[in-house]
Amino acid sequence: MHGLGNDFIVFDETPGAPLPGADLLRAWGDRHRGIGFDQALVLSPPRQPGTAVYYRIFNSDGNEVEQCGNGARCVAALVARRQGLGPGKLTMDSPAGLIHARLTGDGEVSVRMGVPNFAPAALPFTASAEAAFYALEAGGSTVEIGAVSIGNPHAVLRIPSVKTAPVDRLGPVLEHHPRFPRRTNVGFMEVVDRGHIRLRVHERGAGETLACGTGACGAVAVGRRHGLLDAIVRVDLPGGTLQIGWEGEGHPIWLTGPATTVFEGFIET
Image (cartoon, rainbow, N blue to C red; front, side, top):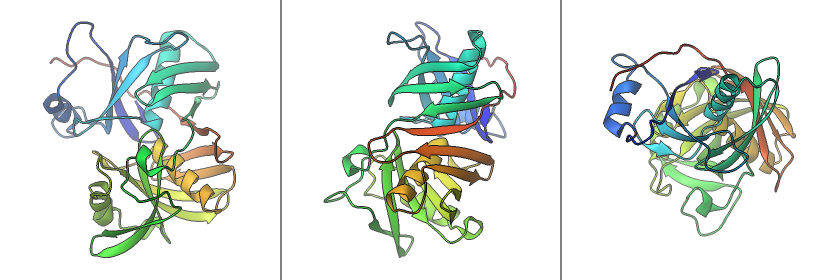
């Protein structure tokens, strides 16, 4: 499946059997010798009443992560199709907590990604106190970032143009910066106007992807906090367009976009 080119394999946990290990996930994630994916999504039976599924997320480097916005939208679309559900609401469970989804009749899926958390400990990020901006030494220069958790960590840089953004140079450096002890996703945000941004994202454990749902949420949250953006924002990514809605501090953030099934199959382990 994919959400704007942010691609996934989605499979069910086998009861009583261990999950594929990191080496096998990396082999499956190889785009030349395996299936190829940004993240692997593992579906398990519900663990809480009122939820449709519990899912876990593994990056193509084999490491488990807390959340994935486009992945959540794909899981919601798949579970709804399997259960014969039409347009409506669906609640899922994940390592980052409950995720509420809304499905429309036109293929769009919205997911409520929780309340953005700017506390450094939430990412985690090493800082003496919470601030709107942080200065980091990276790649031989000083860069200014905003930091926020959308169930997973995000560093956001405002740049003049995504076309010239130093994603390849600064993305890996900031991902592994010592002030992010569990590493971080890195967003490069160009503000077009108050209702429109362009964005490229270097994802932790996957590199630059065509789209990143939590990255789009993180960028809008940081931009809103800095007074640059309105409550509804169009986010253009290399793979297409997402819509983010956030009323502000204390409110949940919503992510909306398409979820597409590419193929189904089997792989022997």
